Length: 452
Image 1 (tube, rainbow, N blue to C red):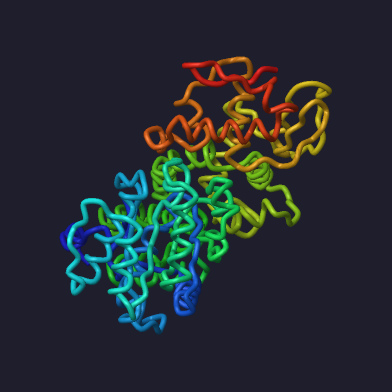
Image 2: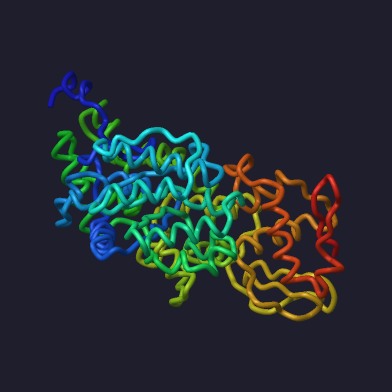
């Protein structure tokens, strides 16, 4: 292909957001097959994946005709309704409104009229009209609903009732298991029990090879020839594979080839693109145990099988007993070189006085109160305690708490009652007398403080 022709070829590798075109969607065959098999039997599924794992793209793909044909599903038997809580859904009425709108968009023959005050009865009436089609509700970023505190337990009981009475199925997308991102009153309800969990980590080797071969054929660029280099740089994590391929394609489009001398430049560009994603993941989405294990793997140490290793493999961060990307390995080692204290071992017993007060073994994730190790906290409770612990004897305001526990994405979504409820649950676990708090104190009008 001549230089002029190459310059007119659009870069087919995209990593700026969800994929909406069926032809651009690759892989996830096992997860799709499982979801459709469960839908065929009236079952719901919980998709779990890291940021940029492709959860939204998979939800979009579920609605396509090609996905239904591929997995032998009668397209006329199911009606899909996609809901993204990020679009301002803050209480049940707004949810019901968006649900009815989504059903109307997918099934125009229902001729649904806008409702000024949608209720549970409104939803049930539409489901009766929809029969014999069954509704599949695709709930993207479902933790936005479970975490903001404006959805009472009755709301989730109603959703569970829709599954039992009308055969409604749900497919949720979250970063964590539902038991981790749902409040206690939801976890203890029947609602999570209708789901089967499916992790979206790395592509399989076959899916990875098919992606490179197919996109190379479509674009005319010999990207498949760099399979070994791309896998070393990006593993088989779909988002990062797209980034790496984008870098290779751009260089090929400019020069018609990629020389060994070009590899260093590609690696630098990839690292620049990936750094902010690695940094956010490291700061907000990895536990102390996960970080410690990744540090060990980055140094090439052998790590025995463990639940933490298995979870990192499910998430896609570890492939073949090593960090999935050479760039992630470099990222970890550079943080260590910069002076950041990175734990590479996991102590299981305290190394300081804990006879009175709160002591947190960050590496093991254990919490000790007055010399006794307490039962494990929930993930949100532990994040809250860890933030207070790291700022002991200092007042922690709402914004700092929300960013530490839920992330900065939730600054405007988590209200004061939700924070107060989480604090109350933490006190029940760590205070000798929750009615007379000794350690977690409220500073009225300003925030909370952990007294050590």
